[in-house]
Length: 340
Image 1 (cartoon, helix red, strand yellow):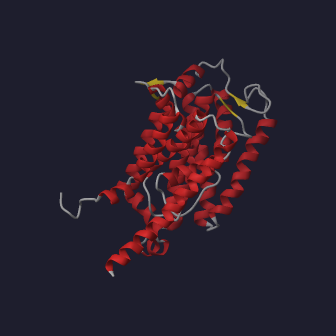
Image 2: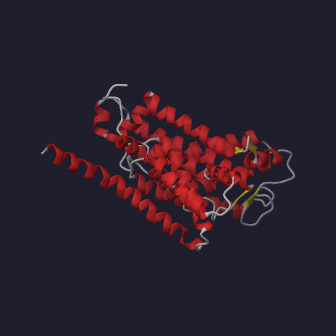
Image 3: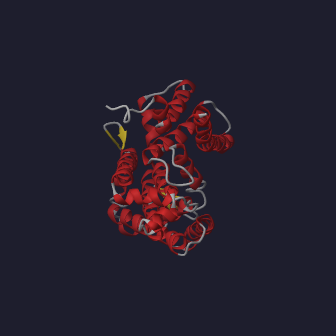
């Protein structure tokens, strides 16, 4: 290996800091937990599945320099309506197809308003965040009770259906002791790692996020790239909604996905995705999501009040963003001093 291709330890740490963050958080959890088992470790994988899937979508959006605040409400709407579709069809395949296609349509709305109409992503997705959850709640109150599984304020899957047990096994089953939903998260991560690092489309995502004007001059359709990123995020939200109902067999439109847009952003940021766009890796999102899951488990292990949970997560998120912003500035100043 040549000296030019050889990375110094500091550069390796900078590139893969999300692995270090996860290992540090996991070490704290191991020290705090008196009975850490293999099953407990695999549960981290399972509980990270939905946040990880949403985080991957958020990562794609952030790579273009935008943001999507609607993914949590999208999860509530898609999971609720997917329950209705399952209750009507008794089909796993139809339910999955519905969730992904409907998610793509919701993402298309966001993408059109942001990418084509060039409206601010923060305002657009803040509005659709309110719209999607409101529709989910309204439908749950006004649909026929049989369609929502006989509940009054929660979408419930009908357990008498032939496919219900298969649904349960998919959401709670394991393959060689590894949760199936964790395997799905890993596969989706690897797919997006390939797409973002080894395809022309991935290079265009980074180009748009790095410098939109330069991307346009290079012949890249910025509006189409942003539109596609929001559509892909909607599809991933649909997959996340499907995983949610196979794990829980129900969806509460008032609480499902509540604050998940922030958790998805946190998973992306902890994984090294830059909020300003053009920098970061989808692989880091997997570790970011697992880090956030482990933080939850540390709070439980230490018997802390659950109401402090989000405060701790918020502090960690601020610290990570501070390091992201301040780190490059400090390195540039040090290089500047050395050159003098």
